[in-house]
Amino acid sequence: MEKLENNIFLKNILYCKQIDSTNEWAKRYFHSAKNIIENTVFLADVQTSGKGRLSRTWLCDPKKQINMSILTCPTKIDSTHLQLICLCAALAIYNSIKVLSNLPCEVKWPNDILINKRKVCGILCESIFYSKNNTPSAIIVGIGINVNNNKFDKSIAKKATSIYLESKKIVSKKALIGLILKEFSLYFQKFNMCQFEDIIKEYKSCCATLNRKIEFERTNKIVYATAIDINNLGELIVKTPYGEIFTLNHEEIFYNNIYKNEV
Image (cartoon, rainbow, N blue to C red; front, side, top):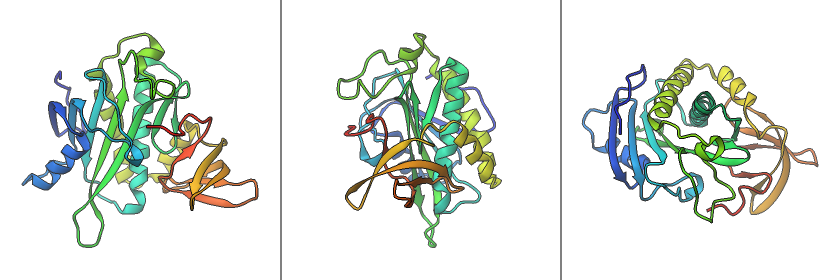
């Protein structure tokens, strides 16, 4: 891995060629390190046990993807605001891909990045609870991006894409990582300053889920609804044809059938 240029966010970068999962690596670091360095970035060429949301497997194409986790400790945090950090990461990646590739990407709530309705990036945020009052002591933001992949396993070929497949150009992973971290540092600063409304306003401007008909599961039943808003906790507000209002928090939603039965 080429050395990344310093920015206001980076304090410590750890790299290895192969790891089980950068999120699991970050957890081990947090629990074993004597002096935790905030804003530590974990990078790996290959993940052997990468996971996405809902414990899905994240398939890895060596050296063509970005496998990265950020371990951070927000100054003002409670469990209700965890999802906003995921939204900050989604905005950072959305902006960075657009700058480097000029591709028309969009965000699927809460934290997938799509290009031409196919998934190019997934984000998995996890809390580490280490305090007596059940307040998160740290947040891990796991990021997987299909950068220069030229093909995918047949099990996901209809649902996944890469920056290369969409732009027909090789993208510098170093440049993309550096830009993402720079962008994330700016949104994370807003988060620490409790500028939640500003984050939500920008997120809604690029969120493809709003005003779309969706499906989600509730008490073992499929519910059909329309996504109508996102509140200041980053939760999705939906309305059924019968006028019922639901608030979704980290739940799975489907539209255009592209996310059903995904591995």
